[in-house]
Length: 106
Image (tube, rainbow, N blue to C red; front, side, top):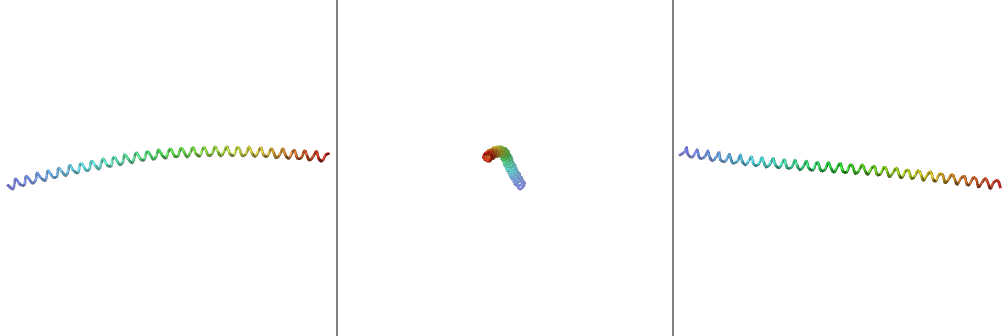
């Protein structure tokens, strides 16, 4: 019966080994699935962050362009106002000189 017991023991060990192998394969597959899911989530997050960065960069560039345009318009208005004031000052000087000349001649 030792031979029969040995055969039984061998079959039990083989069965245990098969069960352990299947368990390891399931664990490996589950681990692989978790890694794939984590990689997919990281790739999606990366894409989302890149899109956000692009949108923010575009918004910043538009804000810079708008600011530059507003600054140019302000500078243009300032130059126009300075020219008008200079013209007014010149006209007043001419009027004063003319008035001074007329009063000196009278």
